[in-house]
Image 1 (tube, rainbow, N blue to C red):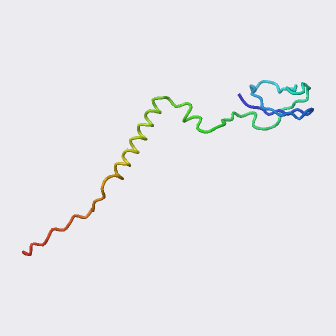
Image 2: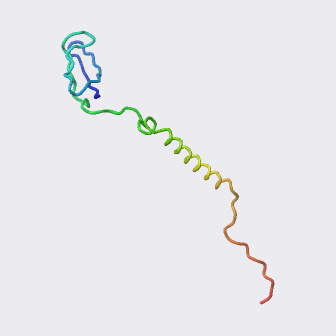
Image 3: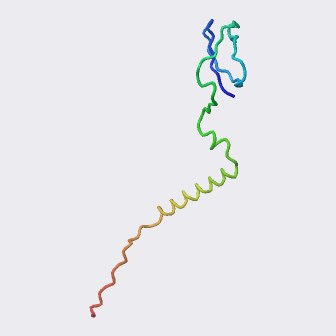
Length: 101
C-alpha cells in the first residue's frame, strides 16, 4: 500500500498514512478532529522500500543462504592457503658445471 502525507490546516499537525490507492483522502485531523486535513503532493502513488538489503536478507531461501555461505567460506579458505604457503623461486637452480665439453 502506498504511504500518503497529510497536514492539517487548522492545527498544523502532519502525519503519514497507509491507504489503498482507490480510497478517498482523509478530511478529519486525528489531533484536533476538525475537517481541515489535506493530502500533500509527494510520493504517495508509489511503493517505497525503506531500509537496505530488503531482497538479499529478507526474501532469500535458506538453501540459497547456505550455498552462498559455503561458497564464501571456500573462497576465503583458498585465499588463506595461498598466502600461508612458502614462497619459492620460480627459476630452477643452475647445475654446477662439470668442466667437460
